[in-house]
Length: 241
Image 1: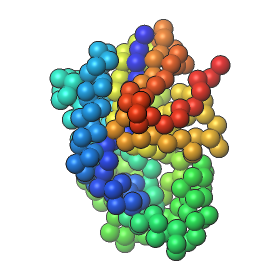
Image 2: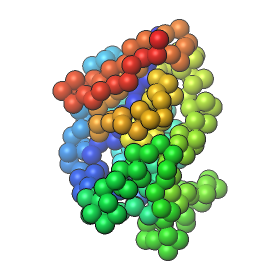
Image 3: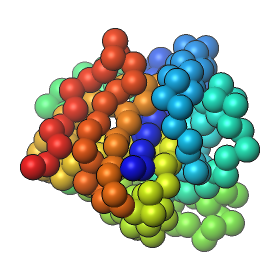
Image 4: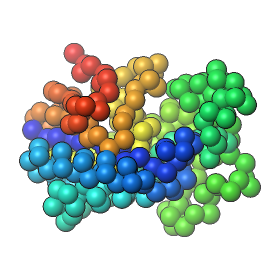
């Protein structure tokens, strides 16, 4: 049996400030560091021997993984950093206070931008201070940084990473950890649990609480899924029949 652990990074500075973050590379808060440490403790207590780890190229996810591996005494595990596991790009909303944005554009419009599966927010302006187009981590990879993304577009870039890198290892019964972001993890949950377009946008994944999938006999169909910190668990979509 293989296990797959999905971990949303610990609370970030802009989570705390209630701002749209997306591809901006903000750090963890003290609470976020504590959540990462607790995640590591919970993972250690499972006694699962993981083969490898994946994360995005954003430091809030990378640092969450570092802290967890230290708590697990598994800092030697190989780690793949893949930009395709980045958070969804929030376009012109990036950096804005969520409550103030709702007052300006109306709560209904902001809800569409945030919760619609295939309607992206307005594009980020080319001259925005948050434009990452010239960031060296993306230029070195030849990545064209998006100017906005819906959850659907996020899933479309996560899918090749899953199919080419992650799924073959799970089928080979290797256990993996993925430390990433709310929307890139939503995309993975949608793939694993075959969640409909209209339901996946309502899935809430708490920060710093490992979501553990059991996968039997080289199959990608989970036999069970659970949050390790039951006190902070959110509703989980049912396993497909």
